Length: 393
Image (tube, rainbow, N blue to C red):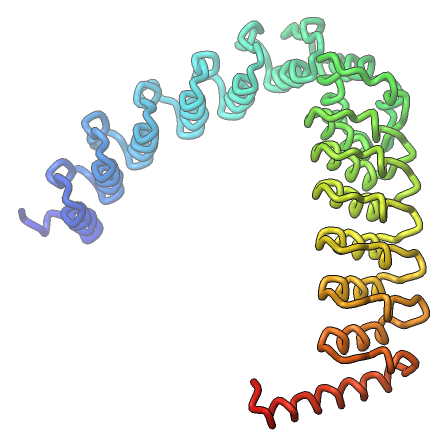
């Protein structure tokens, strides 16, 4: 080989092929530039038959498209021969990979945006081929597809001569969902179309479709419908969007949401109850509006740690006090010694720490926090001295 026939980039691709142990003679030719060589090399390394495209008439981009499709078992070459551009080839390729009937949109007169719309419709299983696609404008095609996704009677407005398809579709959506939903605060047409879809597929919405939900609340309803849960439990104006979310999540987790699906609980309290139900805990000890979310958190964790929460689950304890009682229960000490509402959380901390270390703290119950800290410092210091004298580590 006269190595000076090739430039540095071509030589690099030839050497990479040799290093990979492939037959570089297939592309070690002056008519291939380095980018073409690279595509042939990559195909050979992946044991792809390059005979269909190892030809200088294909530029490197075309070779890349052919190679990538062949690697996925798709023959895109006939469409390249027909003269489709790169963007059109992209949607044809995606359709072939999805085993769709690409003949519906593999037409040179359709630009890539039109093809994208048809690809998405076919992938969604919409019966789009029944319509006069060749004579539809892009916006008309969109209105038909959106109507089909909503379960509307698109045949009432799908005539290519109809210039008011959008208005006609919106009218059908409005008739389906009712005025209340349609005039809800900031609701989107896309949301209303999802409601249409579910109503046209047999979902009964009579219990809630007279309410003017705002966009965020309607979104929680739509998500519930999409997930197949009973939205009637929370599709009520009295719930905030956050409360709706917690009830919806509980339904998805097969929890008995009736325990907390009430406005007596805010969303954060609902969350703590839901987490307990999800873990199979007996939430009756804290599913009470008198506990705030922080108190519920401590009781829930005590239950999770198999503790007896009878001394802990009391309204008069704040969550910091509850935390130290819970720590004592976990350590197995007699928390009744310091589980007293009149003791501050800091005092409980010092008493709990001392008892866990094995000290008799009952004699210091009348001490204040500062005094208890000094006592503990002294007790631990004396303990260390004793260990040192006894050579105990």
